[in-house]
Length: 137
Image (cartoon, rainbow, N blue to C red; front, side):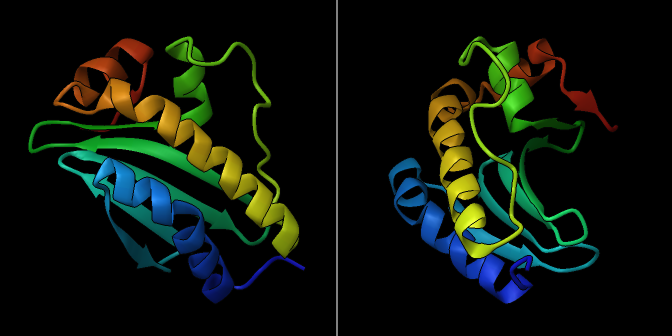
C-alpha cells in the first residue's frame, strides 16, 4: 500500500535531514494541493519531491525560479545531461510501500548531493539552461 501523505512527509524529512543541513537548504515546505510535495530551497534553486499516490512513485525535480525565468527538470535527466551519471536507473522511483519509498528517497537524495555543487553559487540557471531544462516563462 502506498504510504500516506503524512508518512511521505516524515520520510522526506528524515531522508533530507543531514543533506539539507550540510548544503544549507531551507525546508521542507510541504503541500498537498494535487499531490503531496515537499521542497527544499536555497536562493532561486529548489529540489521538489513529489509522491504520486495513484502510480506509487516518488520523483524529484530540480527547479530554478527568478522574476524572469522558471526552469524545471527531472533530477535524473539533469544528472545525465551534466554527465554526473552514465545511464538511467541509478535510483528507484517506487513508493508502493514504506521500504520502497525509503530506498527511492535515499537514492534521489544522493543525486541532490552529486548535483548541488554544480548548481550552487548562482550557477543554477546557466547550468539548467545548458542541460535543456524546460522553460515555463
